[in-house]
Amino acid sequence: MSPTDRLDELFREFTASSWRWECQGDYAIDAAKLQRWRDGLPPDLDAKRPWLDYIRSVTEAGKTWQRVRMLTEPLTEYLRWLIEQTQVNVDAGEDIRWIRESQARELGMPNYDFYLFDDERVAIMRFGDDKLLAELDVLDDPATVKQHQHYRDIVWPPSIPHSEYHHT
Image 1 (tube, rainbow, N blue to C red):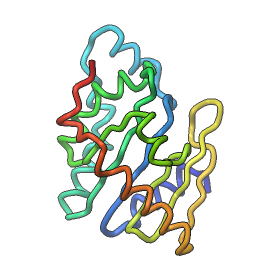
Image 2 (cartoon, helix red, strand yellow; image 1 turned 90 degrees about the horizontal axis):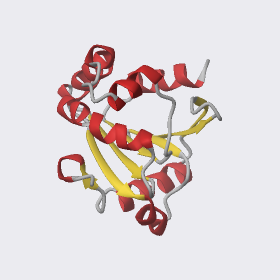
Image 3 (cartoon, helix red, strand yellow; image 1 turned 180 degrees about the vertical axis):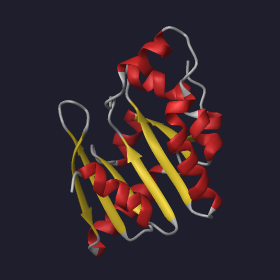
């Protein structure tokens, strides 16, 4: 099973909460989406609709979907694009927050992305040179889960909700 297929499986299986630490300055993005943004055009919401519908269904079912995104210093072009694309995710039900890289490093946050599902499973994500998901380690041993709960618990409070974040 590919890492992406396994992650999709985890999205279907979790029962109460999904929490993500997102700390890469760049991820794979369709060049046309980025070019639309560069040209000052609105995002193609039709392409994003399946994800937004999924988030709506999850949150309407009473599950939480939260993430903290780390802001590199200086911001990458990808992150500048992402900041402008985030409100539709929030409107669909995601609770997305931002934290500066220097603040995240002071807190001891890891340099890899991960999901914490239901406070029971950790999915550690590793990306290839092409910025695509290359590896996914799914772990449920108590020590690993506790460590990642700790990461969540220290970075969530100082992170800025998207609705309060004002990029300059």
